[in-house]
Image (tube, rainbow, N blue to C red; front, side, top):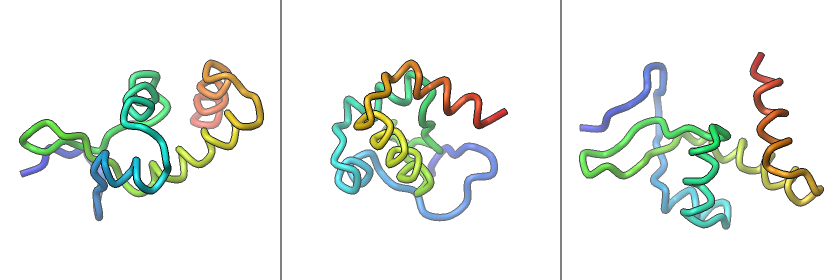
Length: 84
């Protein structure tokens, strides 16, 4: 059984799948999660983080902003201002 966040339906991606699809390292994903830029949708019984496919879009935006020269602190502010 997988512990999942309320309202998360559908396919879940492992950390490995997300890193393969985005080219980002596991450490970067964990850093972004610790900063609140992305959120795991749940975990496996072994504690592996699982993500919804929507996280791929978030990571695409984060990556584009970083490549444009935005520091992570400003990217976090942009994400939180969009959520309001």
